[in-house]
View (cartoon, rainbow, N blue to C red):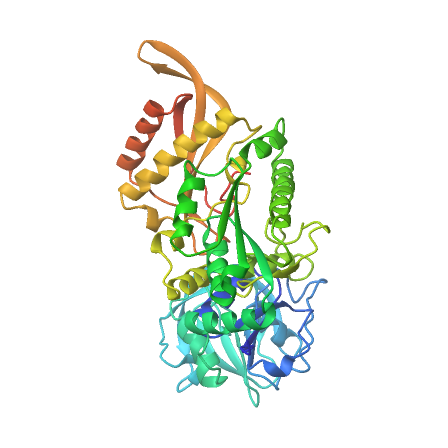
Length: 511
């Protein structure tokens, strides 16, 4: 696919993926690459964006990009660290700010008739996040905008298509951020807005046909959005040569194995369901450490999947539902500004004995784009709107060791919580929800009897990509009724709590 339109160089900012998603929302294809691994085919990019960074241009650990084929050659937008980098190393001056410039600010000056700020007016809210500030513009720098506290909030370099800003246009709090990116990319850089779900489907199916020919492909379905959309793209390309395997690891939601298989039947996919729950529970006996549990589940999944794959003759390819954030985190910016917190189950870790070539139809897409692509193929809303569910399933929502009884308890609790979210019309306003079985018993009273039973935590977050998340302020009446129903109906639980932690500092899952 010849869509190499915009190159984003990552300096380790927590917002880099947001820049990419905002660019994609303009129907413009972009790619993120580490600042020190600039692609060789730089001539095929129409514009370049430099991200922010937790580093300082005044420190010893300055991140030095090689801009010789970019600066003055390509339209360039430098954000935050990028803006300070251009100033510091091109005759300007960057100094520590008297106060950390963090949070909302408003533009108090905008240069008249400036295309970069077309349709943006004084008073526009922007989001600052930096401890250094540009005191003096670089050589040939022209001031474009200021806030009350930051004089050099935006500038351009005379004689080049180089623009720099000290605020973050990619975050929601910068109200005209999308307009600014559109001004730069469409009006100044002349980038085509041709990256749409429909064009992605057409080009991907064509590419898959060319790449796979009459080869057989095996795919592990999870019931989630990513693997389902990947399956539909492959199905469009190769039909019955796609063999889908849906493994029940015994850690799925209540009735999920049966329900998902029924749903796939209606999609025309060639799916085999394999119930290996006893094998997984056996492998998890006595394991409490989260990473050990993940590894045990990963190992058994590969064994089961490999056994099933061998039943199909002449398979050449393994298909995976890997998406772009998995790829970015696995080749993280500088060997690690955005450290990998947990091991991904999608990337890497496959044994040598599965000597299959890998095909990943979704590896260029963010999660929200995957859903839009699925919608353009008329996939069911209920499937595309499903909350993300961790690969290891309920194993990482049962803190401590796993037993069949604990799985039963959590499945019952989870079913009540999720069903009530749907009944109350709250499910679609939540990005991910689930219940966690805590490794503590607490005293309770039921009737005249004293109980000493399990405590469960309910978790519901809103997010767009899982990188950051806020807890959802669910109605008290909903929580009250759900708690009562869980305690009355699920044997073994006598206490329900609601998790009100955001990410960061907490993660979405507890393990």
